[in-house]
Length: 156
Image 1 (cartoon, helix red, strand yellow):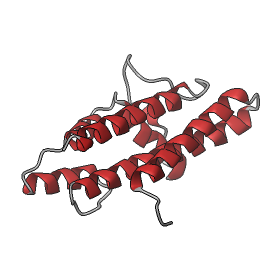
Image 2 (tube, helix red, strand yellow; image 1 turned 90 degrees about the vertical axis):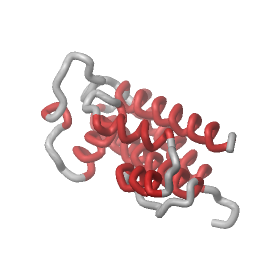
Image 3 (cartoon, one colour; image 1 turned 90 degrees about the horizontal axis):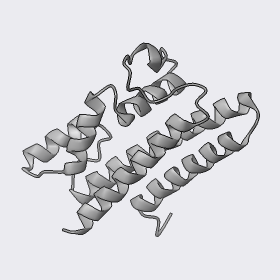
């Protein structure tokens, strides 16, 4: 894997998720769409982990994949990392795309109860048979976050 950067690995995960979403929207087979969207969710969660690895490397942190641990470590080093602060906020709010991505991941891959039973409210992102709209939103928001982090970190 010489020459492969953390950013390119994250990009590959994002592109794979995009392709799964696209395939699920083009397929007329409901049984296949569920599998493709589940695969996209896995790739998106992996891309989020990739972003956390990028942050860890850029700021010489431990490499943890836990936002709270990375934030504590940054505070101990007396550095402010906007992307970690934003992720911590997103993960604490049940109406955020990041929280809902995590819930979708837990539902799909850890056989947990459905996210719809956890999150209540009128401003929810669509779930279930929304033709990939939720997963597409997760992808768009994660790409936006990754690009913003890379832009901010390249300024220093």
